[in-house]
Amino acid sequence: MPIHLKRVSKYVNKLIKTKKGYDFPAYNLTGEDSFFFALLCGVRGAGKTNAMLQILNIEKEHLLAGDNMVYWVSPTHDSKVAEFAEKHEDNMVFVDELNIKSFNNIIEDIRAKIDEWKQTKFIFDLFEQYLKKQDSIDEEELNILIESGMLDDDTDVKELIKNFNFHHPARATLVIDDSMGSPLISSSNSKQGKEFTRWAIRHRHDFTNLFVLSQYYRGVSKNLRNNTNMVMLFPSKDRGTASSIFDEFSNVFSGKKENYEDALDLLDKESVGSFLFIFYDKKKFLRLGFDKQIDFTD
Image 1 (cartoon, rainbow, N blue to C red):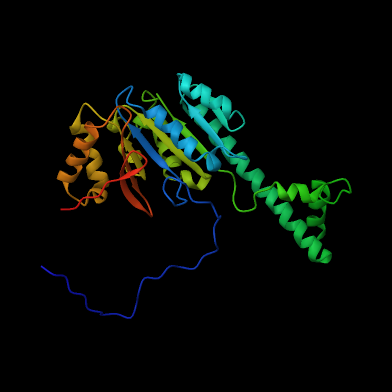
Image 2: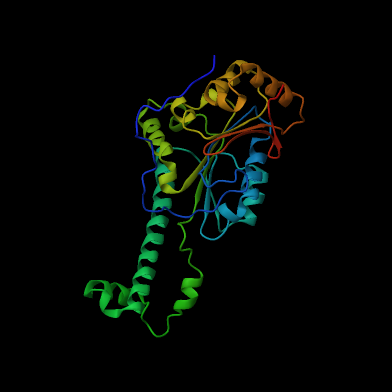
């Protein structure tokens, strides 16, 4: 039955004008700047770790350069990960276990770096204002500039400014691997699970990407799954478990369960390491691997 529209009011929904946020560059994988909240799911040996390393490699200019930092949490150190980390030792940190203490330490480190960036930018902005008109800043602000060293004769201000990213703070990335026993990600009703979930839902406020590698999709609490914008699904023994994904991402399968089943059939025929790449944010797509778009046409 066709749908008909009739205007009955002069009011329309418009975007509220707000101050422009930070100008983060778009990611290579998605073509947009939305922070990742991703689940990589599949049986042991399916290729989750290798795919995660590929993501970091594809996005190394955005995640492994400058002050950007990757925190890789895992009780086991895969040799591939260790070798990869050696090449990026200034931008990659290992954490041996996911518990509330290690998690809070990571978040404190991330937030300390954000605060440092904001303070540095404030000083540079204040210095620019001082150069334009010295009497435009008050005594307290002048003291801040003096204490920062910006007004010292031997300070190479041009070099400092050249090496500073004025557009946005550094991006952080938290990768959680082999941690299904932790209540932080498997038990949303526990005290620790609630604390982690509250942060995960707001991860973009700390300019942080979140990746969880799991053998079982439903091993990750539903509250977390409902807030993901990306799933990389590797072959699974249990299609019943995997069917939960259709309920949460049916839009990319045109709302048809048979399309989802066909995509799983396609995945089963692929070689080891293949996966369905589901992304649902400002952009929405379904791919086989990183490079093949999946469309459903008659």
